[in-house]
Image (cartoon, rainbow, N blue to C red):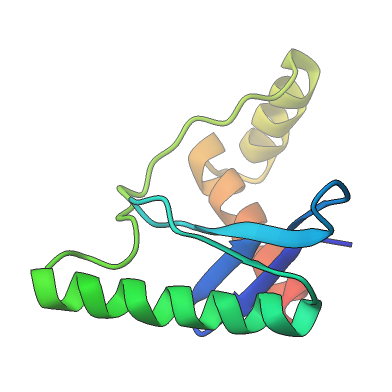
Length: 114
């Protein structure tokens, strides 16, 4: 189970406060902090929709990008044994480690959408 909900391209994290008996979350993948909450799942989804639409309108009015930009490079931390095995497998396949990891990510993403 993932504690995420989606509205258009927006992904919201979801948490529950037993003390307040309220669901709450924030919109992920943006450069600002935008939160939402609701006492039921239906109200939580409506709050995400309202927060996302308001944020998108604000960004469009100010000329700001709605979502974070990505450079296309990032560091991945794995244990040394996994690093060694991935490097070895990439060599055996005649690829760079970067190509091997890129293909692994592409493959994982294509199977998760089926």
